[in-house]
Length: 321
Image 1 (cartoon, rainbow, N blue to C red):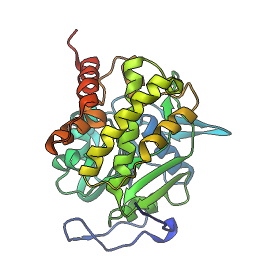
Image 2: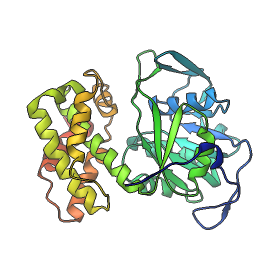
Image 3: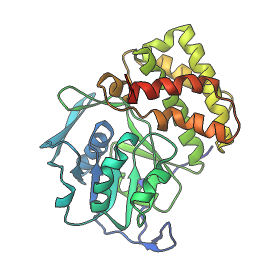
Image 4: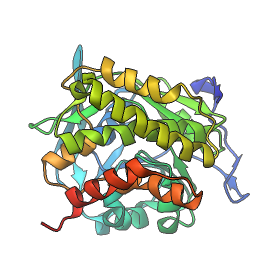
């Protein structure tokens, strides 16, 4: 797995070949939109605003502004958050979509309103199926998947607490240059991966293991238990076999590295799927855990732990009962 080091200040190229062979041209000051200003969307919005590239905000809940808190300060992003797709008057050059996989259908009207031919749609979402999930909604726009590596959580006062450095990984594709330019010089760093599939699957393994928090109703501190660490390790080894069958290049050491990482986190650190469970919202069980079971079946790989975990997560999300 190789990460390409790139200078953010020199990667924006006018006239870049687009995904369908056409030429992608962008304005010198591209119009940027963010759909879904939750924890991840607010973090990216704050990074853009701090650098003088304030995005236009769209979502289901009206807010006059967004607020990001972090060690040493806070950033207020001016709004408002627009809530009616019918009021959108023009398309944008770059659209960051930060909705969860359970909210894609609800976001479809925004995608239709904000995206035109050549609009780059950067999906800030868990999973390895971002392109296949979003392309039907934006057939004239290139969909750029990403891997989000930073812990951010929504607080009770609707502010967002960023508990680490913001970082994204993007594939090595022409459309990536647009996002690199937008985030150049911001507090959100960007890596470009030559083997993006391996990076995405590694993050998926981490997300899959985090799903155990839902079933236990506990945060990261639970991984200090030997029995939970053993279960997580066995589950990750199962997930690793599926990831490799999907073409990911991941070593035997990856499952233990992920368990070690969970054990090193602050014991009160949660995960978005646990927050959704505690709030009674639908869970991203399919994009984070179900995909391992589905892809395992396609490759004829036994997934006994997934066969137990996935139905429990699905029931916790969707019921009945």
